[in-house]
Length: 99
Image (cartoon, rainbow, N blue to C red; front, side):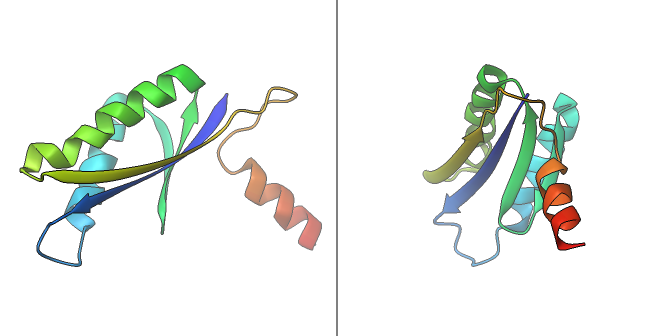
């Protein structure tokens, strides 16, 4: 399994708020049955790398469906192959170190 952090930035919305666009992404992930976690600066999704990248491409298209002409999508993919890593494992590891 890999982890992908995804931030989709709709451009030219006419408002500094993008909450409706974030909600669209969350609804799409729920519909997909994806394992994900919403964070303040993006969404983290768990899955196989190829499937995650395909999913990112589909999610990137969502704001265009609302009539936007420009969307910036940032993707960070962590594909660790020496052990299984899932959602929350990294933060749990840091918390253990903190005591």
